[in-house]
Length: 213
Image (cartoon, rainbow, N blue to C red; front, side):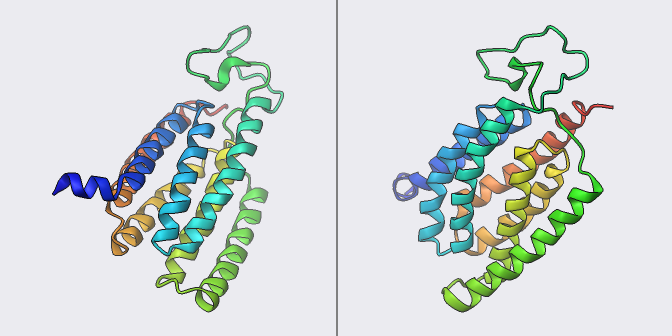
C-alpha cells in the first residue's frame, strides 16, 4: 500500500522535499537556501546512516558546517558593488542577497589557480575516503561513495564562494548519485537527485546571466 510506504519512508520523503526547495533557492541566489540546507543535511544524516552510506553521512555533517559558513559569506559579501545596482535595495520578503548592493557576494568564474588546488584536494579526499571506507567499514560501494562525497565537498565549497562552475560539478554528482542510490533502494532519494540534475541545468543558465563582464 502506498500509505504504508509513505509511513515507512516519511523522513526520507521530507528530506527530498526540502532538498528540492534548497536547489530552487540556490538557483534564485537567495540566502534562505542555507537554513533550508541545514534542515536537509540533518535529515540525510539519518537517511544515509540507515542506508550504510557512511561517506555520504559524513558529507552531511560537512554540509552543516559549510551552510553556516556560506550563510556568513553570502551576507558579508566581498565588499564589491555589482554593476548596475547602485542605490538598489533588496527584497526583505525573499531574503535575496541583493539586500546589500554594497557588499553582497557576486557570482565569479573559477580561476586556473583555484581550479588546480581543487583538483588536488579532490584527489586527496577521494584517496583518503576510499582507504577508510574499504578498510574500516562495511560499505558495499566504497569507490562510488568516495567519489560522490569528494566531488560534493568541492561543489559545496564552490557554492559557498558563489563560483559559477559549481553547477558543472553538481551535474556530475547528481548523475553518479542517482545510479548509486538506485542500487541501494533509496528510491525517493533517486527521484530527488534526478530532479537535482534537471535543476542543475536550469541553475547553470540562470547564474550565467548574472556573471559580470
